[in-house]
Amino acid sequence: MSKYLVCGAGGFIGGHLVKRLMEQDHEVVCADFKPLEYWYQIFEKNKNYSLDLKEYENCLLVSKGIDYVYNMACNMGGMGFIENNKAECMLSVLINTNMLRSCLKNNIKKYFFSSSACVYNAQKQKNTFVPGLKEDDAYPAEPEDGYGWEKLFSERMCRHFSEDFGLDTRVVRYHNVYGPLGTYDGGREKAPAAICRKIINAKLNNIDAVDVWGDGKQTRSFLYISDCLDGTEKIFSSSSQNVYNVGSSEQVSINQMIEIIESIAKVNLKKNYQLDKPKGVRGRSSDNSKINSEINWLPSVQLKSGLELTYKWIYDQVKSGSHLKKFTRNY
Image (tube, rainbow, N blue to C red):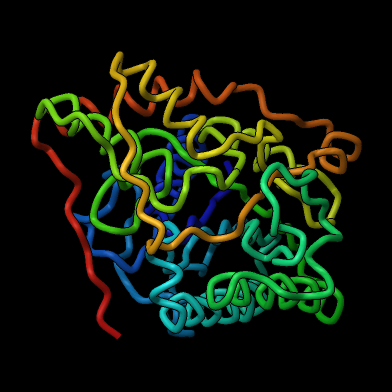
């Protein structure tokens, strides 16, 4: 039985990954900055650490005796968060740097780093319904300020630790992962969860309108969490050290996604477009040709199917009043 460390285990993707690894009978050690009561999923049979992985000594501690490391840890959120907290986002570079150092010290067999579509050159994302972004489109570098720069720099760190020290690394660029058991309010939520929550609140409170950041014409592709885990596993178990997109090519505008969620909720709401709110790039989608040809993976969950599952979970949370606790970092 292999022993895995999941950094960021208290977060959205990290929590789902821990569950998947446990279902496969692996031993899992969990680490996250947040106190346990703020973790999205907690598995009591695991060793659960609540500590700051920006500190080298903490990285050494949690990675001792580990075979494989998944680094899902970073300080991030939706567009509203990353546009207004650039320094906090960039401090996450210390997590990756010190985990890489610790992996060498503790003879880790393989290290996985979760990067983001925010690394891509902004000049290639100025129009709606742009062609899918290929992995080479990250250069020349002009990523999302703050968060995107941290991810791109950390990718290079992984590459050079592999080239210089022989550490076996894997890097993926996630594209807007969504699903149940993640944040849906408080400022860190991403578009699918935020829109589900807004429409649910309108439905439950007999409100006839929903607030939309921007003009709603900006486009994205969204990846359901089970597809995210499937793609992650395929890359992790492969022999390739190439960087890959893990995303969907099903590109939609925010207005189109609102229409899908309205159909799920059986409502038809007015739209209050808020043009002064953070909007991010104009258009972004994932080109999956590389991962399909080299790893033989493509996502399988259609957006409407994933949104139905996400909407139901958030609806149950809002209806019951069991909102996830909010956690604020203090640096």
